[in-house]
Image 1 (cartoon, rainbow, N blue to C red):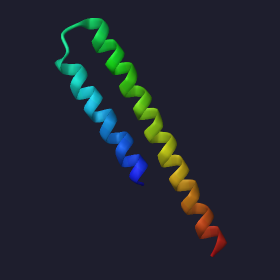
Image 2 (cartoon, rainbow, N blue to C red; image 1 turned 30 degrees about the vertical axis):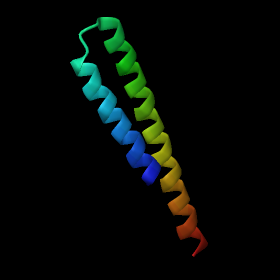
Image 3 (cartoon, helix red, strand yellow; image 1 turned 135 degrees about the vertical axis):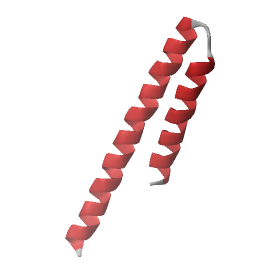
Length: 59
């Protein structure tokens, strides 16, 4: 879950940073980067949940 937390924190930080930037092209680039971090968060969460399910099945 540490990876999930890190990805979520980076997503939130990048979105907050994009709100402070006045240059439209930089803002778009930051928002694009934020959504990449959000996708990484979902991937890490899915991986963690599947890992937990496999542990439960083994018991």
